[in-house]
Structures are given as structure tokens and as C-alpha cells.
Image (cartoon, rainbow, N blue to C red; front, side, top):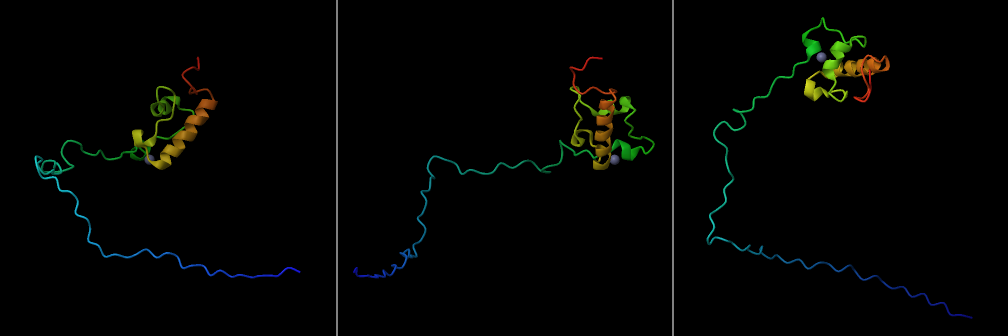
Length: 123
Ligand SMILES: [Zn+2]
């Protein structure tokens, strides 16, 4: 018969990191030969002046008589790029509602062959 030895090893408590209340090591100060660096400040006025933010201006909101129609390729072509991509609203500053209507109208016009899908498309 085999003797059953059940040896229970008690886990040693995790080594607690010795806490030492040391003062921070002073970083080497370089003072010789160098002038203190100062953050460069812009002139008075700060962010104004040269660049003024243009107010966002949606063409279709401004002119309610304009309607987005997929049968109007002349109007829709103002909102596609040279490579027949739909220009993002941040470029054309069209509002979200009208940009959505524009994209569907442009896509419909493409299906109807009023607008081209790609510049490779020959008329
Ligand atoms: Zn709009």
C-alpha cells in the first residue's frame, strides 16, 4: 500500500515591495551654455487675424426654390469632382440633409447615364 502524504505547502506571501519614502532624484540641470527655452508666443490676437473661418452655407437651404432632382445633371455635376466622385459636404458645405439627397440623386443619375461613373466612361 502506498502511503498518502498530503503535504500542504503554504504559499509564501507575495514579496511586498519595500516602500521607501525617498525623495525624487534631482534631474541634472543643464544651465551652462544654454539659454532657457521659452514657448514661442504668437503675436497679440492669437488665432484670429489671417484666417477667418467662413460660415457654413448650404446652397439648397439658402435657395429653397432649388430642388435636388436626379433628372438634372447640370445641377448635380456641380457636386461631383473631376474624376466623377461625389464631393464631400465639408468641401461644398452642403448640410447633412441635402448631402444625403444629393448622393442618392447623383447615384440615380449615374444609373440613368446622365452622369458618368468614371472618367473612363465614353459618351
Ligand atoms: Zn441644406
